[in-house]
Amino acid sequence: MGKDSDIIKFKQIPQATEAVCMKVYGPYNRLNENIREVLEWIEANGYTITYPPRYSYVDGI
Image 1: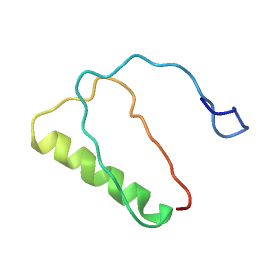
Image 2 (image 1 turned 90 degrees about the vertical axis):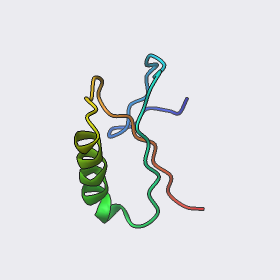
Image 3 (image 1 turned 135 degrees about the horizontal axis):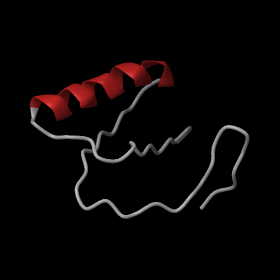
């Protein structure tokens, strides 16, 4: 687990048994568009979000 900062906090959360995942390549300024795409897919396929979303950011190679 990483170190907390002023903008990022780390914590242990329960294991997910089922999830919708999306890998995005490209600039972070398109992140809202990417999130909207996955939310539309969830709704169109009859799924319901039951927990807050989980994100993993990678900056660099």
